[in-house]
Image (tube, rainbow, N blue to C red; front, side, top):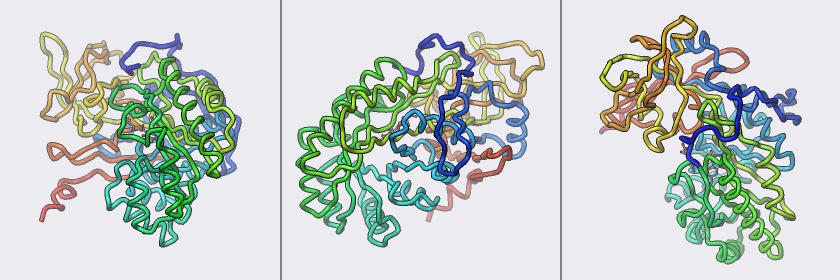
Length: 445
Ligand SMILES: Cc1ncc(COP(=O)(O)O)c(C=O)c1O
Ligand SMILES: N[C@@H](CCCC[NH3+])C(=O)O
């Protein structure tokens, strides 16, 4: 189901439903899963305005305490599982450090993410590298890290027999996981539904053969993997997830006789509510469905969520620089664009938007089109969106920007990427400075 759909299950929109966490992080900190969802309205306006003053616009803000809460709630819902954070959602070093401290592993989509996770101190036995049509430089880098002992216990997840051969050529005989194509996809948009896309994973009836090839090359086949897609939220998505898990469970049982499996990885994809009225994900229902569908498997369950852990921990702050009345709408020009947050332009995704400056000062409401500075008509964050009447210089906050925000930013139109500030234990700091024009031009020879 699309994120653009209306409220799903009669949530009261407050997001104040109780936390379900009763576990504890490895840090020994008291477990606090926090509220199931943090809405944009829950962010303190003064804090956001201070951050804008300190770090400029546009800037991403990421609350690391909220990332920890999300991890603890999730880990409590899946008490027997290992949680591997999908780094592609937000690969900031501070996120790796916070989640490593909680005991999470990391699922990496590239050698670059592997290096960043290791640099942040994640032990290699908790690092999984999911190699999708891996460029040679990625395999070279990962195998070198493994050979040098920097990542001696890392696991490489392959989705094609070619990748096994390419690893073997490089002398790799370490830990290997076979990603299967489950033949069933799910997610908020067709572009993020990977489960039925032939690009991802080995056809199920070939999985054992690929594992056998790896074993003959001396590799240690320790896991099977599948992933349905991203943004699982409604009942149809959950049905697809259940079917995907059942299928990967069947593959794991087939592997049982020949391989000593340590884990069955059922991917990520857990959705979050983007619209103010959307209900939080029913995490317990997903966990129950996952366990039931997997059935009896003598291996540890692994889940690898990205969005669920970071989405509502982040906002994007952006200044209003233009307020233009037209016969149809009020056009608000802001200094963030599709180069800063690409999701609305790529998927038509809804992100909540709030005029932080106008909070509580009695302004009226307009219905606005919120647009960026990029020369594309897709550079639109929202259309016909009710907002407290804006004036030039106001600061808008765009919610749920912690996942797939900065990671998908680009330099199109020679736009330097924004700064990132983090909040932790009540204090703010700059985690990544704003790019400059010379950061971009310095690559030219
Ligand atoms: C293999 C794999 N694992 C995990 C994820 C994380 O997805 P999400 O951020 O939706 O949890 C993805 C992205 O869809 C993925 O491709
Ligand atoms: N980039 C997507 C999620 C894709 C996840 C990667 N397989 C999004 O913003 O929703």
